[in-house]
Amino acid sequence: MADSLSKRIAVIGGGIAGLAAAHRVTELAREKNLALEISLFEARGRLGGSIATEAVDGFLVEAGPDSLISAKPWGVKLCERLGLGPRLISTNPSRQNVLVVRDGRLAPLPEGFLLMAPTRLWPLIASPLFSPGGKLRMAAEYFVARGGEEEDESLASFVVRRFGREALDRVVQPLIGGIYAADPEKLSLAATMPRFLEMERAAGSVIKGMLREQRGRSNRQSESGARWSLFLSLAGGMQELVDALASRLPEGSVHTGTSIGELARSASNRRWTIRTDGSAIEVDGVVLATPAYTAATLLNAIAPDIATALSRIPYSSTATVSLAYRKSAIPRDVGGFGLIAPAVEQRTILACTFSSVKYAGRAPADCILLRAFIGGALQPELFDQDDAAMEASVRRELQDLLGIGMAPLFVRIHRHPRAMPQYPVGHLQSLRKIDEGLRDVPALRLAGNAYYGVGIADCVHSGETAAEDVVSSLATGSA
Picture 1 (tube, rainbow, N blue to C red):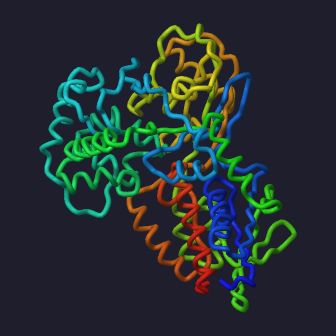
Picture 2 (picture 1 turned 30 degrees about the vertical axis):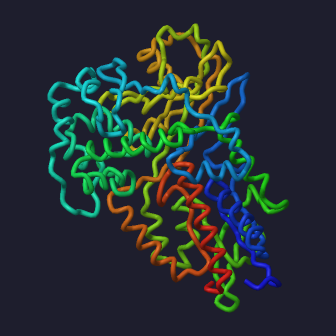
Picture 3 (picture 1 turned 45 degrees about the vertical axis):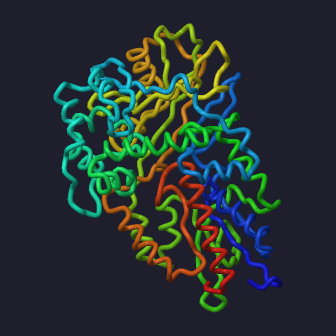
């Protein structure tokens, strides 16, 4: 890129992926001494997408995600580059168990049960979550033969094949399906949990693979010391990450409340034209960090095949219901991170996080903050309830499961319509076709949770990679 020529890059979408993309452009401009101008456009009046933290009377209420995963390094590394490293906090080390609803009662997830695999025999044997036959079937996974070499299968198919139906219904569906608010019968194993597929292929058994992984992790931790828990947050809530990213962007580069009506490519000067409400802006490169269905609309006239593929990525809607209580209002010990409710239990919540038990600083010392999750692919009708009905249904569940009969100090409901992309079987094959098609669309990349991961760290990686690709194409003249 010639030093005398300034290149303008637009990021469309101000969620965490878009913010990470815009921030990465500013980093690259500084690191490589490039003349880059960044503009970020967000249709809503605020940045952060589903991430938002509200301070209420000494409580910290998260509207959306409350954590990032330390095993995926991109989120932690970004926090450290932003100066937020000292603000990162781990989960409460003394209360890390998860409770599971079984026949209307709560039982702890067996110690050593990791997502779908039991790695310790005696806790599995002693657990009331499974029948004797179900326990035997899960333990027998160690001897189940490898599957075929199919490119993809559903999460449900894989779990039933290796561990049996009871493992799917009682633990895997609420644990893993809940991450994606998805139906495990449709969810792609290769797109969501590839490590388990790799364990089967490499070790011949998921349990064998998990045990090998645990030994390797223990050796590494004994050598270097474990710094973080698996889940991390920020002392002041995840809004800190949004605010830090926004503060690092150049003055005047952020345009909230600005919808994009059209995206066009000029054949004559090879620049992009972005049409907003009443104005047109020319840029050299674009990062589309919007939901896939919004990206499809903007690309329909430019790359119809890509637009069609994007429009076929399904989404589900979820809501979070946060409730604050005095500890004295809760008759049962709610030790642990929270509870999950398998679909076979037919509850009206997917799960409930004990937010102030999971992380410090989420509630005053004499109070507790709970957060229930509603909706998803298996219960879309519950998302459509009005606020009063939704609150009432959550309070009924908390009374039944935790014995909480008193009214909460306050309730906050946050809705996330069409916010959770679903990764159906064949998702990765579809993405390969999209990526191939993008080779013919110069200086434009996609970012967000619709593609290669739904978590904050995944979105950060997606945004940063998209920014790097666009800057590289402009620097090499390939745009």
